[in-house]
Length: 599
Image (cartoon, rainbow, N blue to C red):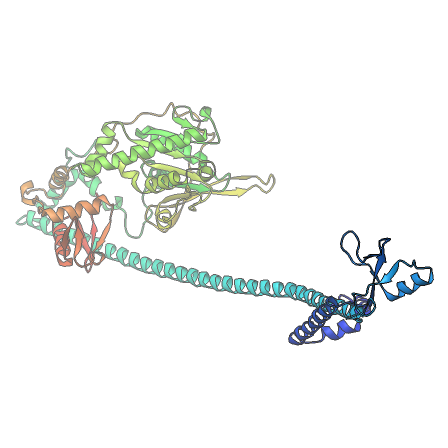
């Protein structure tokens, strides 16, 4: 037994007999033998005490007046008593009518058959008591042992559980490390491939420019063949001063083809005149974009400026802003309660999916479809202010996830661009979407920069921002539009034409080329009917454009590729790619890899 203190041990041992101390030191089998012996003694003694009589008896009778003997009472029990009481009764004056029963024993005396009966009874009691004492001692020790056994069992179970958890965490750790390594390898391969593609594009573009220059020189030499130097000079002067039906106002061919007006490779940022520092904002009008930054950076003011441009461009503008009211958005549709915002998101998704289905089922080209949307007045721009909080108050996570994925990937070509205003460019801030990290990192983004006033310690806009264009990894420094007051009234925005950018068909482009760069030859000399695609090549091209694929690698298709129960080999698919490239719809950028021409 484990004692708490020495005093506890002393008191326990003082209250315990030496016999039990000796018994407690015995092994379990010897304890069982001792208990068995004690029980045997108890049972044997009890059996001996049970039988025979412990004292002698004198049986007697009473003489009646009729001279008969009565030897028992009314209940049939014989008259008897011990010799001691018989002698005492006799000394005190026994009546004469009392005589010994001659029928019992010797002169009525019956000797005791078990004179040690009390001792046998005491021995039985002692044997049973000792056995019970020893059993009680064993029970107490077993009870204590059971407690320790239970604690030991729980300890072993806890150790086993901790070991299992440790092994499971180690497995999780290995899996997480493997995932990170795999993602890093994939990003590295993707980055290397992007660099190779960009190099190939630059080389191809340079090769095209060189070829065009050589072709232009050859055409000019052919056109001026046989002319003197003076005639060539007059011809060149005439070309430079000549106006065409496709030039406006005072524009001339010289002003159109002036090399000083072109963007050269050394001046990659000459996108707009240097006196217009905010021309970059036009990128936010028709594209899906993310405007983010810290508080006070000017992202909300920039969003209002873009909304004004969108309305001037002819868009139907819808604003979702949970932190304001309609007085802040006069002249545009605005919704502010969470119920209204959730309903507008559902309406947006329904309309976007309807347009995608209609377009996929039609035979129109993308440019024709977008022109049709403008002609029908269906160009819609959605502004999501404070998008960071949408996931906290709109409980339909599936709706937000679907909205985020479709809005960021399918909205632009359906003339439903979305502008998201958030505090950061993480997936959590973008409606909590998952699985589109690469898309978010590649989308058009504007980070508005803020600074803290050293006196008031309040954040304020620096007037600067960083822009990352679509499908680019480079951040460019730009200036934010200068505004003296927040725009709250959009009703004075000038309406635009139904289609601000009407597409120019191929015939018109070829006609412009003939009039401006191929003077002297007929249009029919340069126009070639494009190669007609086979039905299967046409289906492959429609699949690539419908899924918004920019590149296609023949190695992506497995051998015996199966579509609608029909199998195709890799060589067949590669042959259809040759048809698409031959039709001028794509270019080869690698072995078995084509890049679709942008519309």
